[in-house]
Amino acid sequence: MEDDDGLINEVKAGITEYLSSDVPGFRGVLKHRYSDFNVNEIGLDGEVIHIKTTTISTRNVEACPENPLESPSYGELSQEVKDLFSPLSWARMMQISKKYAVDTRKPSEKESIRIDVTSKEKDERRLIHQCIKKHFPNLNSNTIDEGDKKYITVSYIQLKSDRRLDWPKDRPEFLHFTLYKENLDTFAALSILAKGLNKTASFFSFSGSKDKRARTTQRISARYLTAERMSKVANNLHGFKIVIGDYDYKGQRLRLGDLKGSHFKIVLRDVTKPLEEFKHALEMLRNVGFINYFGLQRFGTSSVPTSSIGLQAIKQNWENVVELILKPRPNEKEMLTKARKTWQESNNAFEAMKLMPRNLKSSIEYAVFKGLSRNNKDFVGALGHLGKNTKSIYTHAYQSLVWNEMVSKRIKKYGTKVIIGDLVQVGEPSKNVNNGKSTKTEDESSEGTNEESEPFNYNSHIKVVDEANIQDFTIYDVVMTVPGHDVIFPDNEIKSWYEERLSQDDLKKEDFKNRVKDFDLPGSYRKIIVRPDAVKWQMMGYSDENICLTLSDYDIIKGNAPFQDEGDEGKYKALILELSLPVCCYATMALREITKEDTAVSVQSKLTNSINGKRAATEPIGDVETAENEASKKIKTEQ
Image 1 (cartoon, rainbow, N blue to C red):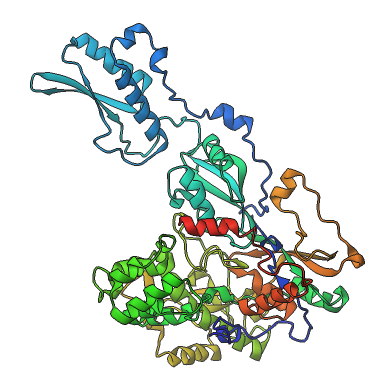
Image 2: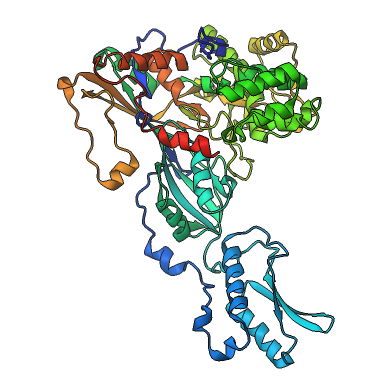
């Protein structure tokens, strides 16, 4: 599935057809800068999400005080209370109370306070308990006897309901806010914010992951977090383009799939054709749409396609799965290459793991090495060290490959005609998704994808086209089967296409049922044609090939002036394209339809290099985004 450079290409990924193959395309450079790719989430209400303000509203400040449990310092106490507590005991109670008011981890037994009350009378001990209850309602106190000594022990109250005692009763539990980020994927951005809160990225929930090499805006939620505290963390970030705002409190967290889709604003640079020569392609995209292929990022970016690993997982050849994941591949970091080679030559996972630098300890390879270090023959156990979403990228890639190939074959033979035996989706299924907590996977934050969640298996919403109802449907209703053990195939010759394709890999439908739960594949359905919404475009002239041509949400907040179109005076021309896509669609596949250009990384790199080649010999040659990539390098070092 690789091209001459060892990278994925479209033909081997089953991406071969166009809806408008007779309409000429044009050449344009995608993502010359990450600022050429702008993504805004579309909420369930259909509104495009923009960050509007970074300040906290008066409503949030007044109705939701930052810390209603703020206790007086020892110096502020009356003499009567001072006589009951030592300065050290009071300071320790303040420390524990504040710490676990914002940190929901269970306190250790060592984090309790013992106050010697042997010399105190019963009434004095009662006053101590009452004082603790009054000033520290999230602490619990008990009197205990140890020999001839009496102590009052003070500890943090463990709540079965997981509700913070300092959280106002009239305030909803979840803080929602808008996250704007640049050149970071969603997981990396949330990891940075979580670090400032002394938590992990899983503390946050979101509707869908957004691209890395882009400027993106989306909503995030977190439980028992105040807007003031989140704002303070965000304001103290240095070296990262992360901005948050539009705070609100709600009764529910965000969950994966809680969105309509995403709105894209994309810059294609160095367009050499005049608009008149490719305007028809843009009109076809708006009026007809594009083939809803799974994009190349679905199949990984290495010389070992994720679909090849997925096939072995479906066949339950676990040793082959591990060997393919750990197989040496070109153009990787030196220490990772050494680790792979060590495993290949000695099967010593522990030694291979020791070679992995700190910034790779969150990698898939490190997790597998860690599992194998305990038993280098327990391949299923080693794969168990990977997260569920990470494991699914391999099997989903194989399903996607088969789907792409079947759709290409159908479009080539039948075009956009609905035929007897086609499958159509009727109505909208209910979504049974997970809890929306962030999980890093390889195919999240991929370039140009709006893949917030997997397609759903909803057989009850699938109908077979027959002679009686064929007039009721158009190609926009037709779905094709993503293969699995609990789906149906089209009731026509396309069914035999699926069976023949699977037999090439010695598979049958029932083979998608896997004894390892995380690799079990019931299958699903996917629309074959998508027509984007809100499509519009404009041409711009510019002379500086690296100048930013569009305003981001943050630029607008700061009041930055937009780029002034240089028109015919500009040395170069760019197409600014806007469109909205539903979930599970790839913007790169929409771009492919209009440009007729391969979306492979190697092809786009050559186009970018063609821009760099136009520079004068006196200009520095190198990465045009060197400064922009600094934040990304810092992330890799910290993880």
